[in-house]
Structure formats: C-alpha cells, structure tokens
Length: 466
Ligand code: ARG
Image (cartoon, rainbow, N blue to C red):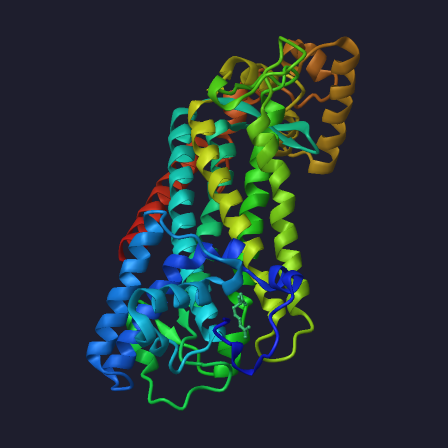
C-alpha cells in the first residue's frame, strides 16, 4: 500500500515505479531527512499541534531508524519511491500509527528542499576545509621554492623568469577566490524552506523560526512558492564547483607538462602515478589527467540543472527530482580531486637545475635589456627593435645574450655598457620586478604572508560555522 494510495484503484505500473523512484540515489540524504524530521516534529510538539509526548516518541523512533541506517541494517525499497517515504514507512513499522503524525503540516516538497539545503551546507563547509588543506600545501611548497627560478610562460613560450613560489601562489589566489565564493554562497544555502508546505503554506500554527533555529539556519524563505521551487543555490554550488574544477584542471595540465621528459621540471611521486600494460618504461600522470578529464562531467551537471530549470512553471515539478544526482556526483568528484591534489603537490620533486637552465636560456631577459636602454633615454619602441635585432643575431650565432662580448653588444647600441651583464642576470631579472604583485622576493613574501592571514580567517570561519 502506497502512503499516497487513498485515491488510487490500481497498483502502479512496474516501469513507472522504477522511473519515478529516486531512492537509488536520494538515500544519500537519509541523515539530513531525519535531522529535518526531528526538527519538524519537535516544533509540532512545542506548538501544541501534537502533544510533547507524541513528539518525543516520534523523535525516539526516528533516532532508532537513524542508528539502524548507520549500522547498515536498513534496505530501502523502490516501492516507497524516495528517501522521505521510505523513512516514514520505517517509522510506521517502528512505532505504529503514531508515526503517521510526523507529516502533519509538511509536504515532501518543502521536506526535500530542506534536505538538500542541509546537504549542500555540509558539503560547502567540507569543500572549504579541503580547499584550505590544499592552500596549506601550496604555501608550504611556495616557502620551499622562494628561490627556485623557472621561466614564466605566455603562449607556452618562455617569457620572463619568475620564482616558482610566485607561480604556485597564482593558484593559491585562484583557490582563495573559490573559498570566498563558497563562503558567500553559504548564506543562500543556509536558508530554511521548511514550513512552506506543498507550495502555499500550512493551516497549522507552525513556528518556522523555531525549526530554522533548531537546524542552524540563519534565515527562512519569505515566500512559500519560492521555497519549494528554488534551486538557485544548487546552480550556484555547481557553478562554484565548476570553477574549482577549472583551477584544478589547469594545475593538473601544468603537472602533466612539467613531468614530461620534454620539460623535466618535476617528478611526481610513484604513489600517484601508474604504469603502462605494454611499455615497461612508462610512468604516467593518470591522476592529474583524471582530474582534468573529470572537469567535463562537473560542467555537464551545471548545464543539466540550468536546462532542467529554464522553463519550469511555479512551483514544484517532478523535473526537480533531477537536481540530485549531478550534485552528489559533483561532490564526490570534487572531494576526491581536492584530496588528491594536496598530496600530489606535497610529494612532487622539483628539478631546480632544469628550471633554472631554461630560465637562463631562451632570451627571457630580453625585456630587461630593452628596459636598460629605456633607462638610458631610448624610447621603448626603439629599444624593442634594437633588442629584437640582437635576439635574431644571437639565434643565428647560437648564443645567449651573456655569451656576447661588450663590443658585439655595442654594435647594436652604443648605450650598452659593462653593467648590462649584471642587469640581465636571471636573479636580477626576477628581483627587478618589485611592482606590487610582481615576482621580486619582497613582493612574493608579502603575498605569502597575506595568504597565510587569509587562511587563518577561513579557519576561524570554519570554527564558528554551523
Ligand atoms: N523525490 C522527490 C524529489 O526528489 C521528492 C519530492 C516529491 N514531491 C512530490 N510532490 N511528488 O523531488
């Protein structure tokens, strides 16, 4: 017998049952569903909608069910469609007809909404925690590689030398913005829809604030129709997650390139690589590749949800049941990607010698040579031309700037003096970029200090958040 079977004369078609049911995936919400039900029933008791004794018995029943679920003793059934009705059925079995009072003044529409809010709230906090862990590893590596110099690239061509710390901290900045976005979205996630009923509110004298407070929500939805149909917070969540995946994927791409023999900048730890079934010499960066690869599915979940929502009339429509699998899969994908990226970065070996060698060749100091001429009064555009010609000459002669004699250099511009050699030295080139946010040591140290401060602020947020 279905919990909603009253007006039906025929059993549900078997295939309908399968397509309609969400229990195969929404059992992920079991804890949240019971948490929400306990808050609801406690309020029903306090407001005199049921007696406090009844509320106590229902709560005890729900707690028993939760313990059984945690112990793996419960098998949910497709026949009861979703997690909400499965648990209600379990409650009826547990405490008898009194269990039927749980759903007073509530609909599955506000119930599923509260479950998802609780779930996403928990995951938002968890993702912030994982991002902080990753940040700490990046900071650690940046500290160790303050004086490691590599070429910075544009167009994947050697451009100007930078500190490895500076390069790594660029990712710290990206993940810092991701943390900001999650924390900002938290206020919309932490809004309570319960009490909206099916769509229009309820005839019972419920106390919505009491339920919200019990569940740790900061505020409640001010429109019952919006409360049951809003999935904006899920779109936001998937969009923030998509951006985090973009950042992880870009970082992965660099790890893949850098660990290739062509670059030879890093060696990834054996524990995070795999071999080839055919080629005995191979050590492949599968995990960064998978992080890069899995980025697509997270974008897919975002696009799928936006598409589901775009033409939905108010209020709840069964289409909304499609919001869950993508969110669950995103959480799983992102949590494992973040949990893996931290140790991958922590254990990688950096080939400072190779990085330095590449930074010193390839004319990465060309801009500095032009700036040198500018400081001696030459207009920048002219200096650019002079250095361009010198580069061409060096390529033909198979030389670096520093291999040229002073006379050779002077033949390109009489302004060049002995002091130029010092100016185009790799360290000097890096140190000269003292502008705010540049790669000079003082600037990188400053940024590093600021990042540590920001991490501490996030840790404080984590310690006070619900
Ligand atoms: N399983 C449903 C979902 O995930 C729960 C809400 C069902 N509401 C309804 N009116 N049929 O959306």
